[in-house]
Amino acid sequence: MRRFLPLLVLVICLTGSGALAPVFAVQPDEMLEDPALESRARGLSAHIRCLVCQNQSIDDSNAELAADLRILVRERLVAGDSDQQILDYLVDRYGPFVLLEPPTTESTYLLWYGPGALLVVGGLALAVFAWRRRRPEVTQPLTAEEHARVKALLDGAADEGKET
Image: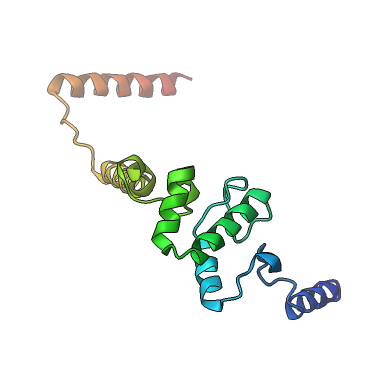
């Protein structure tokens, strides 16, 4: 117990000081003065992929390209573009990959429905496998000739056991 006490104190200190709180990469000089526009910009930024980091939104990324995209989003908001117009502009410029949640189109059906289809196919395969293992095997009764052969083999084995 004494070994874990310093670790517990460290976790409490870090949690209490906000050190484990989420950190956003948006710089103060990028922020808009209008809180409504800034809120829209943050909402949009959370759905736009950083093309350098690829697994982060531009809101979370410190990459220079992400900063440029954050500024571009804010400039277009100030210019009066709607959220959809901004997203359309970015998709036209960078392709659908720029969206963290790609749209459902013919080219993304496999991405959206592939995992579910694999899960269903795998479940069916397991069910068929389990059903086949539980099913009793159908055996044919021995013919008279096979009975005689088994009896002869067993009698021969019994005779060998007596001789030794």
